[in-house]
Image (cartoon, rainbow, N blue to C red; front, side):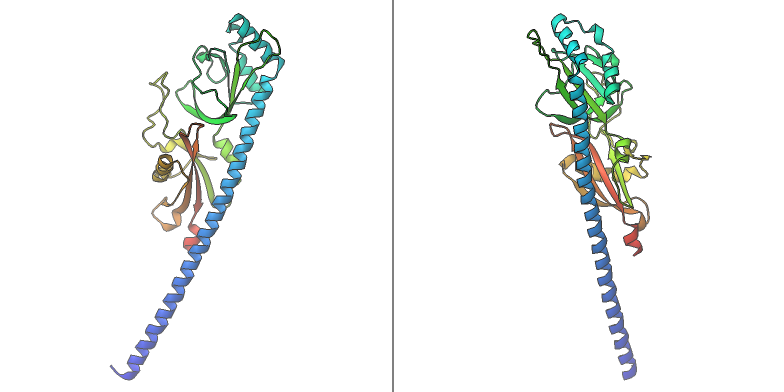
Length: 294
């Protein structure tokens, strides 16, 4: 090999190495910029979601409080505690829920039994299993007559009476659904998708164990977005399970198809009941298409 050929080979190698180093630096910088943007957008959305969640909680609590303060509710509570007869009020919950624009509403007597239920009228006489404590609002799943379970934000209030004879504790328990209409109200950035895996890790009703799906198995149909079912929902199972198990916010890169362009930066946020059980998982997905194309 001549000296000219050696010099040409050395020059070519030097140029190729320089181009490779520049290309690698640019790719690392692009990835860093996109990942930083995704992290900032996710953090912004989480903050907005928390504010919206708090706002909805306050709305539900205010609606239940207004119902408990009405003369109609006070008269009903007085009658129940004095006579013990709940039969005249079996259908009151439906009308009260409609007036307050609540999806769920139950009237619960001093003995803890349901007097009237808007979402499941046939449940009158059953015990309401929630713990009556100091939580003003809380998240819980609600059994429905068709065997399904719905996720909702709930609040309860005791109905007070100024009469000296009033010595019972009749309560109103009301709630609003957390579903695709709730997701539709959340602000999103371009390329972002918001989904909810509902009723995660929950067992069917113990009162009617034959109702409800097998909650030990990940069911892609229980993952919804504002538009309905989520495409390739099964790909989210490891992320959802990780958030359920840890009870902490979890992030991962997920490949929803065979191409890199179909990958997303996904973050799962567990939504918990007042006792810490994970009832659902909120999933924020940001497309990586722009980064891959760049």
